[in-house]
Length: 472
Image (cartoon, rainbow, N blue to C red; front, side, top):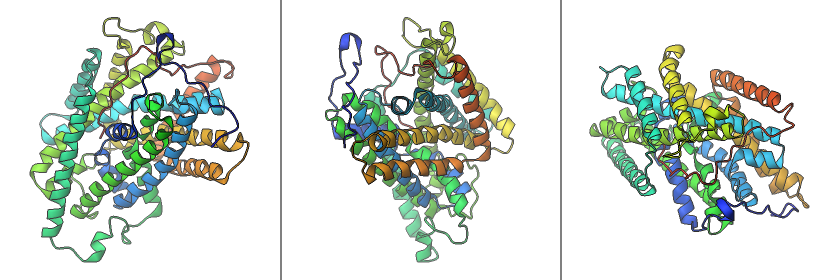
């Protein structure tokens, strides 16, 4: 649907105006989205979501999918309008204002910085479950140093290896579903209500708790927006929209099967030995060998995600260094042989190590992982609200003909994201708000009231793109 203005001319993606090769079909785009989002995405946050919502994880997965579908439509439409941008801050900055684009970009910086942190915390906690004689802090140091070492060495898995990893993880997920089915068939249950409780349990139902759980469960779908970054490589750019929506639907269907089976195995009345690493315990109840197999599978998935996330955070800092938003001599430097922002990799690794060790001590009640996950979603919800606002501005406010669809879809997406954002934990909203206030204050000071550009978040054209990774 036209907004009355010609679409922007695609930017060249390489030196001397050489553009990216349009080779990706709809199937390729969907596969990329599934790999990035991961078929086992809900497993790492299963215990937190179940605990916060008093069960009802199956319902929450559906609610989170609905919320993300609304935003997926806005992402797909904006990717069609800006096929070379592919980012929330670019959409907002170009459609609404550079200042608001900076605010959205600053929220994404927090996302990038904290993604490797949640991976280190989860891997360390799961490894500590396997080998309790080794303290959590030792595991945290090991994983943080390992992620940093591999990134400094420029080690990156290929697309083929990532596809094999995704296939292997998918096989483990299928084994779990089969084991769960046999477990339910072999054990007595109370009647038809038993199969409905994962969606609605009148004994444990609390509306606010369900919304609070949904605000965490949206992490399951993080990565669907990566499809929009492939707009210049798609054979038909208009397929970005259906690919983004179908990625959400497929991940939602897979996730629903996994969590529904888990809830049938482990009723809400049974406490988890460890909330943060609950899913391997659930799998072990279905079939004891799955405890180790599932735990190891999720560690591998989180390691792949954490390594890539750390490099992504380093490259965002590099963009800030190149534009002098941060000291360019440190953050804008590139190691010449491997062509990576080594200083930033070490900086992010050091920060992750510090927080991974300090957060569990500071929170005292074992909510470090939940706080970190909520902070990631804090930034993501701001970005998603920005994309919906940009879509509303382009396709409704600036359109020659204002259609109800162009009003209702982005408005609904914005309001749903705002509702979920408001139900994040109080601690995450406080910490996240402090981060945003500091960033906005710094940006306003640096640009004399946002009268000049501050941060160039775009990566340089000759920097190799990261391969997709499996994220749990």
